[in-house]
Length: 145
Figure 1 (cartoon, rainbow, N blue to C red):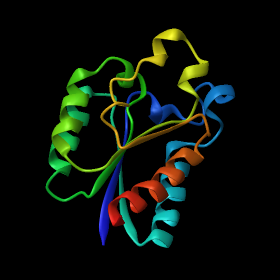
Figure 2: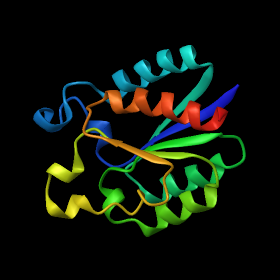
Figure 3: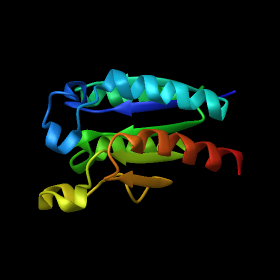
């Protein structure tokens, strides 16, 4: 069975209460439960990880290369600032899908630049929390094709 990890960056632990007009009312735990149910229908195993610490995210990406078939990442604000996370993903050498709950291109100018998009297999943004289950379907397709 293919194993996928979904990595969430800073402040995503606040989903459900953080700017619900932008991010909705679902918590990160709600999203994790939805993804685990959806993963069962795709015959894949999914792990979840969230950290506000850039170094812990990098460590998780580096460790994933040994046992994980693909990464779905919402790097939060690190999307726009972290060359180090980008470098870790480049060295992962397996499918990576970047996700964002909001449409980063309809927000502040500084959010329009992603350090991850050009090295990711794909990107899903602006579709709310369903971006995670859509990314699971997409990464499963990438891996099996």
